[in-house]
Length: 470
Image 1: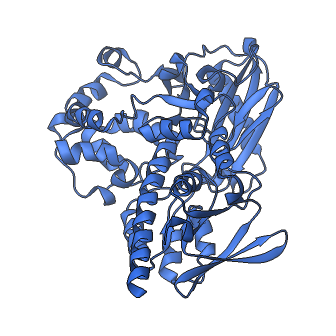
Image 2 (image 1 turned 135 degrees about the vertical axis):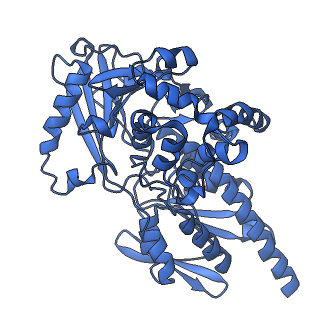
């Protein structure tokens, strides 16, 4: 009994599902990917309109693991992969309506006006801060305030969390949401010590830190990546298939899905779900209530992506960075902006420049309760003042993500422990996706490889039991 006799059904053609499917197919398994949309990519959505290349989901990734480069090469996308321009290394934070570059070395840190002298001295006291209690039940705000001070939380970590998670640091678990940050304290006793000694560990693993990892995308946008993987999977993907349910069927599983207004059935040996937690809850609706509670209790805040194109001469702000983030204390209507055409080439025509703004998130989900669009005028006014805009945009488009990014909230470890136990109690069912193990592109690819290992171990177990049974 070889791998080709084991049928695996994967729910979802986002980067997690596709990467896992690709590696499993290379190992000889019979793979079917069911995707509800008409195209691959999940939240990676790229469009080309009016001379602008628009990424409505992730605009880039960080090359934090060698697996990314290997996968890119294996799917034939190496020549399309591009790295951020040098200017993108500079990140801005808004304070008192002024943009300040986030300092990246000691001299810049002492010169910056982003932090007060008191905050700078407080930061130097970090090595003398006491170690914390259990990080799974400790918020990012509690952790950072204790180790680095309140001002650093307000003007560095708060906007950073909004930019990465669209989240609120008061509600996110430091150990679940930022495990590497927490590990610096847990293993080395402090953040500064950990940055020094942890670099040696990363070098051994050939993994750069997220601060040093190269930012990448593709000439035709981020959706090129899942599209290239899907191209290698060929007929293993079925689009426009909405999975209705998964149920046990003897030693196998029955997957029911609708396609072209017809209900179809598939019998499979293994089911891997990579869809968002709230979608998984509907798929596994006939299973134990505790599973549904855990899946439904993972919070995904709403985020609106606003894309703006301007003529270059209309923008007074020097575009020499990645963009800017806005601390909550600045009381603005949006979270920050990416300066798209300053990061990667091929994003706009030579006489144009493009920006992506992010609105809402866990900071202000109430904006969309009665979405009459009134806040959009305020957003445009605030952005115009910050960027010294002299003339209106020549192109505007937007996309609403009603449930954008899973929040690794305080106590999130209880979800993780339950999902581990559920998989153990229901062999052949695997739960994956960005609500497990990290939200970044790099995290999803690393976790996909780990999922492949777990599935192969289970497949070996099934073969062993079959031989013993015969």
